[in-house]
Image (cartoon, rainbow, N blue to C red; front, side):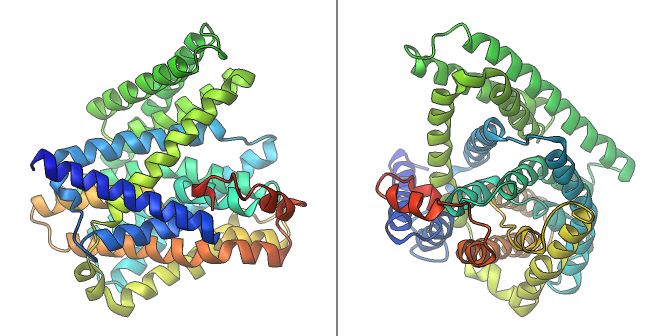
Length: 415
């Protein structure tokens, strides 16, 4: 790929993302919805201005580093005060691990026509709700506590678990793993190893940042944080692929909890960079989708996604919140709001490349079904989330006035 073409690729991608964010700010529509539409417009399904595969191996590197930044930012902002909230998130995670994998496997095979191995990979890829989508929606809606914290916590915990599980299932399909015992050991190894490394790096980074004055050296603190994050992620991926995702979340959680009051300015800078990463990644990954991959799925693919949205998710939330102090309206919103995000798209794109290189039939169909899931969940749930929350009375008191007064200075990605 020539340098000129590479420059055009990034220029068009970032410009399309910026226009989408500007339209979101002007219209009040969810930014993630317009980012996806922008990617479809500039990519294979539209004007063919951007071809992500032109980046070659660089696509995996760029996507991995930017996703680690988004998860690191999510970890910093993860607040689950009280044991009741932690128990709620834990129960949702455990129930969804069982129901989502089993339900996704059956739906993808019987309704969308994927083979059993690829249906298993699909169920793991779409397991997690994406923090890159959930967090902006929660901030836009201004949900009444503790719904926002529960949704954000669920996404951050399940995101790395789903990515690691999908990778191991992929290795099983390709014949690089032998049996479910190796899969389970690999899952525990990557999750526990990544969390341990991330916690250690977060602790060391906090100790270093405390020695740097917050007021006079904010750029230095940011540069040091990004340097540690990207080095940690790269080394984790080198030793244990996909362990960099749980490591990024763990490092962010430790930094956010230990840095306390000194974290506010650093947190703002990292959040801005994470929003820029979202603005770049969503159009880039959506540009990889072609109608040729979506159209063969037909109504079977749509039915598969609707089963995930209307049957599997409500059942999981109902079981997970049984006996917990949630009203029916809160359970309804938790059951409806489960959009998939960037990590889901990134994993699908990268796995499709590996499957096609290995000559596995149905790789394009798998990617098409994953992106159909993203498009339907982000589109339907993103557009309906605020009206539903308002109708159910789950918007925090005074948020309408606050939204109106802050409209001029609001961040586009939160719109």
